[in-house]
Length: 234
Length: 234
Image 1: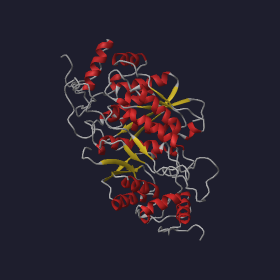
Image 2: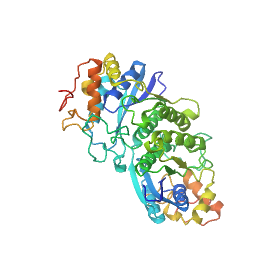
Image 3: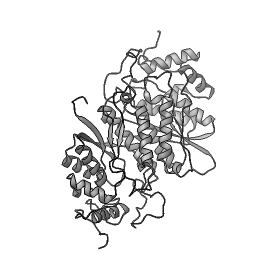
Image 4: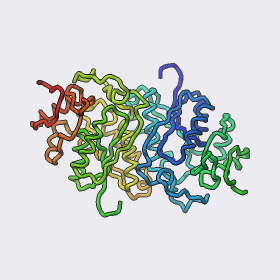
């Protein structure tokens, strides 16, 4: 867009990380176009949370794009496999909640939107410390994605924009994300982390994502505003 | 898949190029899992053609994945802009029929499917000669995509598969594609190239894609089995 302002696309899942990434983008002076993906997850409450976060933080726009990953199977988040209820991951491998090629698909839709609004700046709330099992959260993956995207977009090839995949949380712990989000005025009570929330969007408290969330607030020394069906440590 | 056979994903649009790419993959000994994308194009006849081609060539499977690119606008194929009816492209630029980040989005969904069926082999019928206006049809883009994909997939990171984006048509003219397809038994009467077909799926004969199609058959010296509303040179 040629309105003299800096525009960016932010992938917004409805969780704590993407909400904080969006707040960081806004703090950097970007007008943020939020993009949420409806990828056939059981977790539709996430999308409602994304809408609330986009409104609360003041997104320039918020789009929900449907993409049919469920048909491919391969993940507990989309294909009806049981979500593991123990907070420890089973071994060192990649968690069963992995969605095939998820960040690649999500970044590609963000890239389509970025091309449409004529910007190259894309924010994604990945971080390596808490989610080291996901190969598509690593800096070397992000760098390679950026290189590819700069060869894909007509604006980039014509030298009018440069694609930059911003990952402001990439080296943060969940506690650091909580602290930074609080500084920037993120209302974490609007966010949802749970892999398997109750019918009213209440956190189960026992899945891996709920475990990281509770640990994050504890370690940041911040009151946890979330409602849990069952709390960690009591 | 660990059935002792070679499996590949082929992006199948319903046009001549992807049909030929699929036939080449099969000729190379792959069991082909065809993937068509329903991306909100006006051109729904394309998807019917894809289904006919998949059946005729004997795909191991054929999936149609919905992905909502239409909401992003920016292209005559998805947002209701007029399709140019003159066969010459307007100048040297990128055609208005460009869909934002299209091959990046399509390859990413192919990658998700490849991950699910545990293969790294993906075929896409891009070619640089006839479509030089699309930056995401160039070999340097494909190479960069491949590098990124090998960092994205858990199987690749664990060293179990290597992602290879096969582009068997990349340096072929349309005439060479026609000739190779005929050799491999592709029934081109099942394919649809037109950007703006009539209600019964008849080629308009006047859009850029119809122009290339007719020229391809002419130059290959092969009878054109297509029905056109209006034929080139006659």
